[in-house]
Image 1 (cartoon, rainbow, N blue to C red):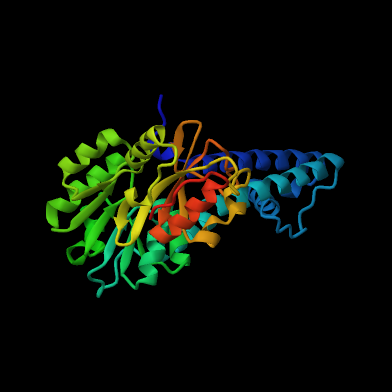
Image 2 (image 1 turned 45 degrees about the vertical axis):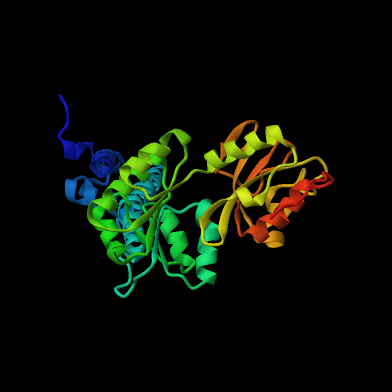
Amino acid sequence: MELPSILRKPLAKHLILALSVIIIHILLFLYFASREGQIEYVNVVDATYWVISTVTTVGYGDIVLTSMGGKIFTMIVQLTGVTMVFGILISFVVTPWFEKSLHTQLPRKAPPNLADHIIICGYNRLVETLIEELTEQNVDFLIVEEDEGIVESIAQRKLPCILGSSTSEEVLKNASIENARFLIANGNDEENANIVLTATNFADVYIIAVADEMSNVKYLKYAGADKIVSPKLVLGRFLGNKAVDPCSGNLGDATNFFDGYSIVELPIYPGSELLGKSLGASKIEEETGASIIGLRKSGVLTFEIKPTEIIRENSVLLATGTLEQLSYLKQMTRGGTICKLNT
């Protein structure tokens, strides 16, 4: 026989367990009180009073079990009481209240006067440098992200953002899409297709979509994206050129992602000053201004990179920045290899 749905809920299970333990404690108290000759306390009211007082660690001391077994039983009741009361209180009352308090502070709607701005759907390293450029150029933007932890982190940095799914028409309206300059779909390919379809369904806005897989570029176009940016497509073209000419790598072939902002792939050459260093220790961003948003190692391109990632000879850096910044980074990746630097 299946229990009712309410009894399958975690809180209901904990309460049932707690009630069962209290009943057992009451019965054991009646046993010990009777065994010690404290007959006046052998009743349900006094037994319940003692158990509740002991479980909550109040312990008024007007009813005391004096035998060795009674004292051991009293300590057990106190320990189980701390676990039950504070466990249930913290897990189902304090923590949910605290989380709710945090969530209510997260923004869910764009400022009323926001217009001619750029909507960035999805936050990751790919757009970090773009955000820095927009901030420096005083271009208004708004980040839409459904991960509460990320939104909280962004909000702490005082970056304009709202919490919600970019595939929701209501959320895009809350982002003031009708007044936006353009929209950047920066989720996975399936999410980006849904974002594009949703946005084009009710708003006339220029849309740039970021494609993870080259095979999905055409679907994003069909969905209505005005421009597709595919880091893997650019990387494949770059590596193809490398197979023909080891000294190729003209930054003029970099993909323009935004005005004055490009994406390019730079392989690590023998003799490079970056070899053997971690991304964090290399101080690439501090030295050049460019940002590393992806890393290709052992034939696999990943965007989930950490500061502790070691740069090796077979590494290929996927970097973003201005052409000047990327040129500085290119020189760092070249090392002792002599190749003409074209910008």
